Length: 205
Image (cartoon, rainbow, N blue to C red; front, side, top):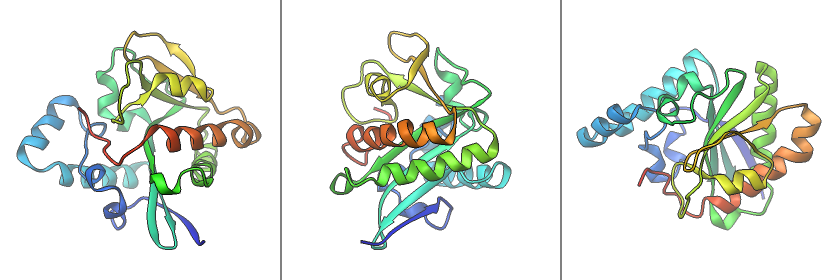
């Protein structure tokens, strides 16, 4: 089984799950996102966002291929590039952290260590850029796959709540060292990405 993990670009954006390609839940503020959906331009807005982040900050995602078949992806960026993050009552994300935006592994390929491989690459990237942690907004009332990860799953894999909220707590995982990432975080996020996202439908309800 041949595995390839490559940076997300406009060239391989089409390899994301279909509904994710035009999902702009995180990439636009609520008002702009709704307007883009109504106008039918969400896919163009997604492309524009990825292009802008790539040019200004650098790599913001990874796509995993097994035998040339796309089977997963992860998206991440500093909070300044994630407009929707400011709409949460527990914002802002800490300035020393990168936001874990979303991720997905095709169900048939879960449990094979692909999430761990993805996070290894992301961890190296973030360490090189000097970041100290990953933060995420959780959904304390999560019932089905959506754009937010369930808070209890985040807590179960090592995230700590840094700001309480009955619906959308903000959680943080310290990037203490490469060793701690390898021992704790890669396995944790492999479990998270593999167990939480049951279908490629990462869109707001």
